Length: 175
Image (tube, rainbow, N blue to C red):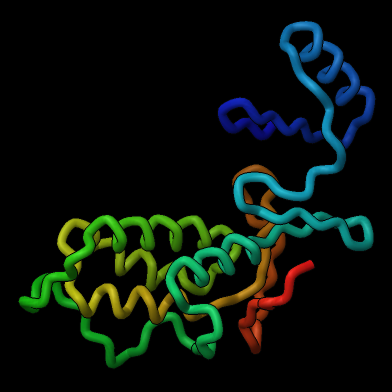
């Protein structure tokens, strides 16, 4: 079961067990059955060729849009070796809440963008008193836009894939 506040997503590879779970939960709780799950907690769920693929493309695009980075050219490395991150260089970043929110969002993207893990972890050390250089490095990491997924069986990673997206864009046309 995947549970988040009032959302419950039953998962099972045995239809009989799934039916028993649905029957027992509907008799105990007021619930409704929705269609096939496409989005859950910022994850897009796709099912190509009898597989389940998770990605956070929509979440990442919204984060880029919120940060004003849509249209920026993607970069190849999450942090440059020339970026020196020190605890205090005298140039305090003025918007503490913005930095903390951005670090939190990047931590959430680690679920599917594995190659930013080290950079985000390093930048999170400065979340209480970020400098301007830390914010600039965080924006750099955000430009490392990658599409990917991870598949776990219990706590064990059994498969993953990541692919750099060559162009980031957002259409201005209305549907």
